[in-house]
Image 1 (spheres, rainbow, N blue to C red):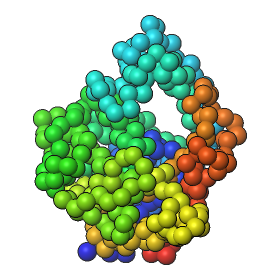
Image 2 (image 1 turned 90 degrees about the vertical axis):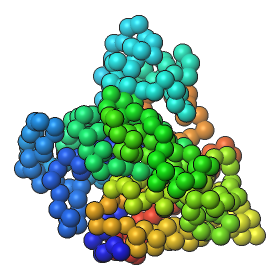
Image 3 (image 1 turned 30 degrees about the vertical axis):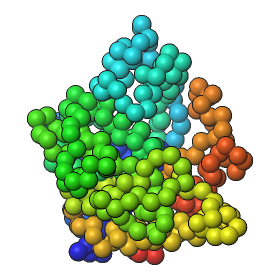
Image 4 (image 1 turned 180 degrees about the vertical axis):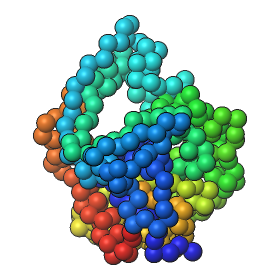
Length: 346
């Protein structure tokens, strides 16, 4: 049974940043009683592999302070521009195939990916640790990470698989992650010769079954869904992981399930009710040694795939057809945060 010191962290930043934050968290010595485990003292000695880095007078970035910064363009020279040279330049060791393919898809996407990696986010007034794949992978082998959510969470898993590909490899899903249910599809990474999960991804677009707001278990039906995807059970796997990242939102849409008017207000109330159920379950079952990250969803806009550089002023979604209720993401985030305050998670 969890106690009031259970750690729940809401992060309203792009998905990949959570992985950086998890590395910061894993690199520092931690006390199980810390009320804010992601904030380090400015003079903290942080061990990274066999080296010790002194984080100078600047404090390590928090999820809030990390957002205050700017995109810096540092063009990379990649010649010839092909998938092999691209991987070498950015430090990827990717599987030969993965769901979204991204830069592997075609030459147009490769060119676009090249333009993307020319930009680096630089926070102002705070410090981030350098990424050390070897020590990070070793840490995850001892403190496994579970990613639960939609296709954006899957992209997060795929990015991590590429960044840690020299140390973690794809393996057959462990029975304790699938619960023995062969219908549950799991992406799993293991450390070196181990068959145990160091990182696993379970697709659950809604976190619970929409028909009855039930947190399902293996061999139970996924229920109706509002789009393509999956709604696999996941709570059975929680005891096997020290770190859990969950996300939902983009697949929630107005529907007769929420009320007779198919309105956004009905959708909001349904989302609020369902997330209260998720929080209540986590509050009861998450142990002191575990940490849960609640990842928000960065919105896009209808023409975002046509852009090749960051926008100084982001285009907010308008609620028009083709934007899939992206304008509701901020509302969903407020519901997450309100649930945190209500349950007094530290």
